[in-house]
Length: 95
Image (cartoon, rainbow, N blue to C red):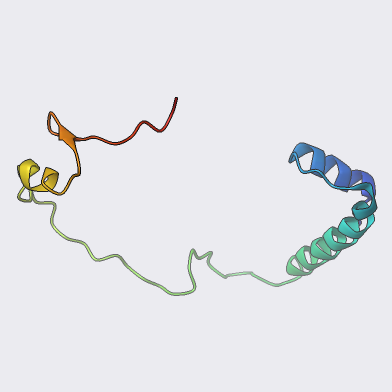
């Protein structure tokens, strides 16, 4: 598959990336090379190969869902530089 300068221009516009005109030809060549690699992957025989999410089979350890020792609000807020009505007070981030 060959990528043209017009294709690169369109993708750049859709992704809101400013690409100088003199770079379009170079990017078209790079993208054509990438598409060539992707086409090579289509030639690989994957018949009978199960899809995987990781190269290492791993299972997450399970634990019981139990209630922990909550109710230590005073101890947690003791670390705060400033607290009011049971909450941390932080500087306003949005004006």
